[in-house]
Length: 223
Image 1 (cartoon, rainbow, N blue to C red):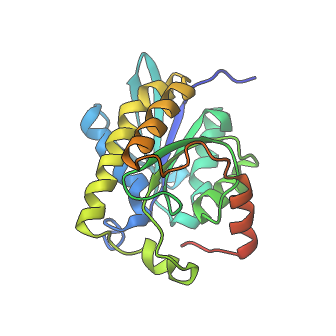
Image 2 (cartoon, rainbow, N blue to C red; image 1 turned 90 degrees about the horizontal axis):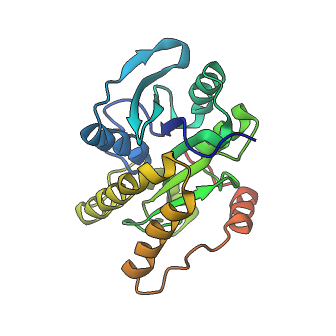
C-alpha cells in the first residue's frame, strides 16, 4: 500500500487566453493562487505537454502539473508524469470545477466516478485507476444539461467570481493537511464550513456515487 499523502497536484483547465477567465479553468486559478503562497516556478515540459513545478509543504516535496492540452485530454499529461516519477494514483490530487456544488464551496473527495466531467474521464482512462483525490471547486449549475458546455466555457458573474475565489482560499488553507495525508481533518474543515455557509441546507458528506452513475448514463459531456 502506498503511503498516505500527495506527491502530485494537477490543476485542470483549458490552455489559451480565451479560456483563462472561464469557469472551467478554476483548477488553473488555484495553482496561480498557490504560487502566491509558495515559491513556485513553472517550466514547460514538452514530454508531459504541460507546465510543471514543485514546492515543499510541511517538509514534503510536491510536484505540480498544469496540462497545456485541452481539458478532455488531461490524462495525456498527468498519466505520463505520474509514471515517470513513479507516483501512484492514490498520491495524486486533481483540482477541478464542480457543477454539483454552488460557488463558494470546496470539497475534498477520495476516488469515485468522473460524474460526466471529461477531464476526470480522461484521467481515469489514462491512469487506469480512479482512486486519486479530487479537490472540487463549486461553480454552480446552469439549470439544464444542454446549457452546461456554454456555461463552463463562460466567465462567472462578479458575485460568483468572489465566491469561487473564497472557495479557492479555503482549499489552499487545508492543502498542508491534504499533502500530509490527513484527509479527514481537511474534509471536516471544508465540509464544516460549507454546512455553516449554507445554514444546514447543504448535505455534507452525501455519497455521490449514484449521482455520478446517473450523470454518466445521461451522457453529459463537458469540453
